[in-house]
Length: 317
Image 1: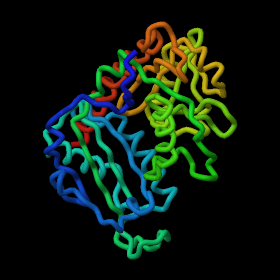
Image 2 (image 1 turned 135 degrees about the vertical axis):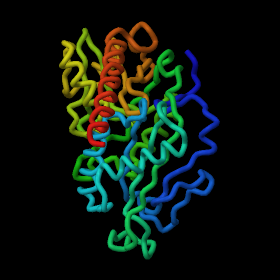
Image 3 (image 1 turned 90 degrees about the horizontal axis):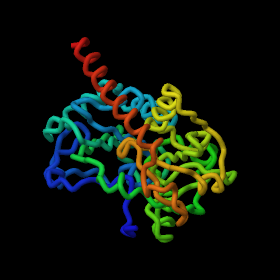
Image 4 (image 1 turned 45 degrees about the vertical axis):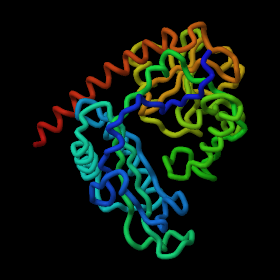
């Protein structure tokens, strides 16, 4: 097996990304000139929220679900950006159009509490309004992800309790996950498999985690993982198509003995897992039959959703 480390966010190289225009607080600026203040609360404290979205045939897939998560998070930490989801869509559409993007594009939308008056923690020092940045890149998942699969290593870093920092926040404060990723790489794996505070299998440092056992699809209870949009879609697709699916506690014992395993995320959709802690998962070194079935169902859903969103927007204009 190739030992070169990869990640679920590996993309095919695209030279066009060197000449991007990036949205920064109302302006589209060249990539080399896209800057924020060193006093920005996101840079200084990780005080902000982000959202990842993909562009398919001119539409931002599952846009409403992503906006529900974003605005719920912003409200929870008292960041008011003075605009709604349709205003955000306009930002994303303008940025994509400025870069001649229609499909195979990925957006990292970042919103922070904004520039601070002094370099200290108190949120009241962010007195100049929120910072809004949208980076939209030409980005297509690397084909090797499907043929090779991801190698996971269980890490000591855990997904914590909501009373410390709720893992459902897609916050700029990602150090917990960065540490988990470092631990996995130092163990010779691609990504870290993180447990919950009770020792049950939860998620990876970057994606939600599923296993397949005896034709059943298992994932965590959801209590300690990010409320992933793709995760929710996979669970719903299974229920609609007669694939048994369970949100439950399970241990590494069940994960090691899985017939298949895969990760879910906005960028890679469903990425197969080839091994966990050096133990080979399944017999195919990548996606098994259930994972492949789910991928096909998800592709069909994307096509339907994109067509529906385009039709709904056309009726409004």
